[in-house]
Image 1 (cartoon, helix red, strand yellow):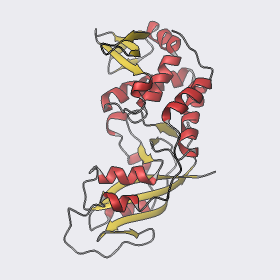
Image 2: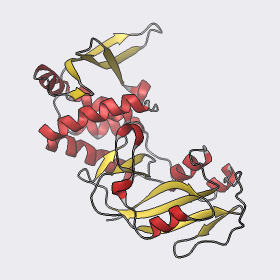
Image 3: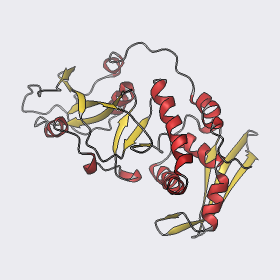
Image 4: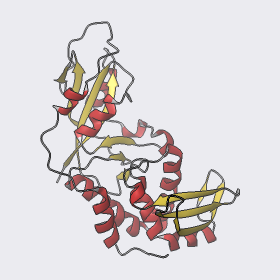
Length: 275
């Protein structure tokens, strides 16, 4: 079964970007900035529209590219910046694998080796219970990756996401079945339940848009087959407001909380657990 995923971007009045997408999305040319190369999409249109409304596009005409796809772990990666909490829980559940790789110098990021990993539970200064995966590196630095309900709604910095993603990629090379099973459950949860998250396409085949929409003169125009007529002058304030973003979405039923997913999906994988 295909799912619709959405890429948010922008273009100027030449519509050079749109024209290139219309002929097939060359994902090999995409750059993922801090997390490596790949083509990023959102699992809901609402998330893509919010990305535009937040000002992350820099050309005068916002664009939404709809794509029919079958996300799977071999061709699609989870965005670790957005899905940092579930990635942290995955590392916690597989702490023994982390320790094994650290012992054998199996994880190296920019010339620095992971030397030790541990899972820690503690009481914070506010009196609440916290837990984290502790990482120790060969240059003497340490890093704590928070695990638990207090991180469910948080995202990470690009640098932290890059580190976590690099670690999971190493685990995937040695234990592909474990990582693929986890990633498939994450994908299934977000796609089947209509939850918003970001995914990165790393497959070799070009993607083809099923629909292209451009925001022009305060309206979303279907530009799948041809570009809209626009004036030569660019309107830098041509952004949809919140009302226009909301009107793009059908009424949705209440979405299950991410905590439910973490407790009931990942927790049932039967992965290595150690405290």
